[in-house]
Image (cartoon, rainbow, N blue to C red):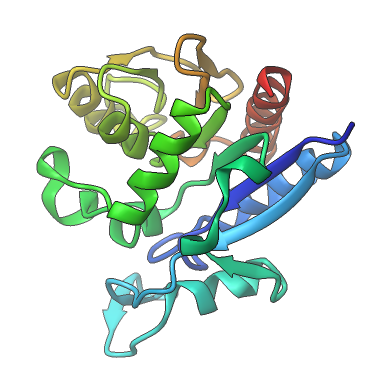
Length: 224
């Protein structure tokens, strides 16, 4: 029987929303595995809009749900309506939208909080003992919603390949167990049914990121 997976988006575009390549890769891997996917996003205003050519904020005001519809080809639902009982698993791709629209990590760092809507969903999947997959920066959501969980965002030693290593260090400071993993690897927290991988936290070739996300999807579905 086909697994049903909820996919949560946070906008469209790496600097202010969902990382498009990550979302697309996850959808391809889920499709290949025969899973049924429904996409969700919060119906809220984005923290800000970024000109992706310049990497600078502009004065536009945009809505997270409406922007997420660009990735979903229009087929996206308000996160407030997500019924955990209707799904076998949850996956949350990365992108700065996670740190700006699903939480305030981008402005507060390790003193951050996550939005009540997303915290409610993550805790509900966790309590139902249903698996979750998170990649890139999105494991910070699990770190807050599931205290003490095990996860990876890549490596904790900063270098050209791992420019965001400070996030890994912050996860450990928050009481989580961070495991150093390469871009093609995942960490499976069996107790919490949480599967994480670094994706674009690593300065890697896009096919390596695609393959690593495939491993994450495979392991999530195995737990479902």
